[in-house]
Length: 310
Length: 298
Image (cartoon, rainbow over all chains, first blue to last red; front, side):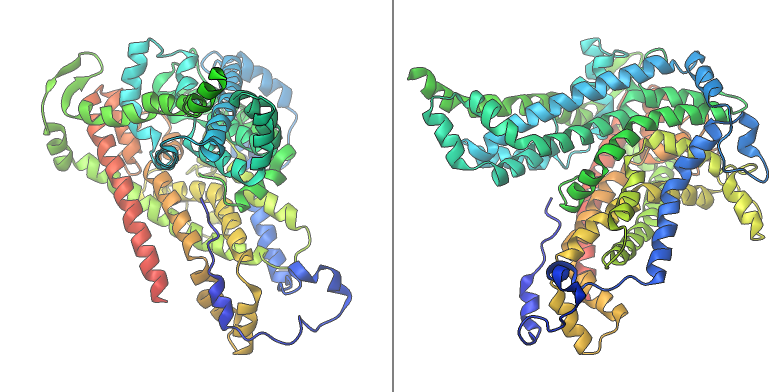
């Protein structure tokens, strides 16, 4: 997952000028990092503002239509201000019998939480072992984890469904939980993090004090992993919350996840009730937006480190 | 003493076993079992109705629907990913400057990535409505006739590509931005002294320096886009997985769904999925080769 393998040798070709960079000025304080960066022009800001508006618009439109009556979605000229039907539409959404929205929301919350906790636990456990414990086959197992990251799970959807039939899990909530309890990406990410942050001396000291391997993991490693755990947990929560194709294959309309549930609204209607569909979409997006507000900055940091796989 | 020796010896295996056991059952087994299922006449109702060898694959080669779905998948991939990565490079270059509110702009880039795909696809489906969609309304403003976004093949591809790009451009831009910040600044200084324009610096320094990162994003996009499903499936109202009246935008993954769950042909569906898996691997390899060739040629 390293994305920044630059070649420093290229810089050797450049002529180095004088002692440091001789432009003393008010910016001196920050020069080390951004001093040589180009200044933004008005054009830069225009480009960025267009990007910001494009990012926000579909979500704003979703919210606007969700607060109106259904005819408003096709109003000409369109109005981009919210209306007064928010509570009414919310009521209609939760009362709708095709969508089973309340159950879908609950199911998604349960599944996403369990999967996130499980991925964080099992992946940090395996990541710790691969990073710090000595055992025969360690290199092989680490490589195996990396290879699993390239396997697209969706391709196995038919046999997975046959497997669910054998287990009697078709239509049951565990069908969208159990197959996702671990992730190769999670193990790899945790292994990298443990290697970088947990010093060997600390582990040795704990060992000498008589800690078992699991106690070392629980009392020494886990506390050091907290930042990585939060990010991995939330990314996993997001992915599980968003999962659509497998839920569509294995679940039924009477026991849906939230994505399945809003898709029911999308597919069932003859004349399309946009206010209802958009209200459902708003609720399906809301938990993710909360994550964004709380953790957007850390997520940006993680992505910039190149630690995230799509 | 004995306990502690046993602990040191066995704990590592115990710690990694949940991952390997669960992955084995729910990841590796289905993938391999796909091959087995694809060699059988296997249906939803009748179950396994006997070994038929490569018949499903023979059928696949002669199936116009499969070739159509593959053409659609590759076409949407091409018109979505190429502009997306170019735009991401441009945005990253834009953000790689001394800026006010830098964090706000970065957060805005990542917002689409943190939204529910199915929900956003529903919203975009309405925006791309032929009669009442906002996009046609806006086009009309510029004197363009309404476009039949669902009915016409290339228009439907464009609509789906927009949904994909909306979600992923900012994400890729952040990855590029990180890589750009790792490029030593004095390389640019030297180029500027030699009289290279900003444009030239971008194409001859930034892009080659970013080569590993570009390859990475191309491969990730390939793996993702070859399995494209949610956006076109939601765009195609009615849930038939047909991808429009003439299969204008039916992707390979939609075809797998249609065969397996609409028609109950597990065996044939499995053959298509396995073909898709092989294609994902092949295209990732080809992509990485081509990308590195192009870049080393500049």
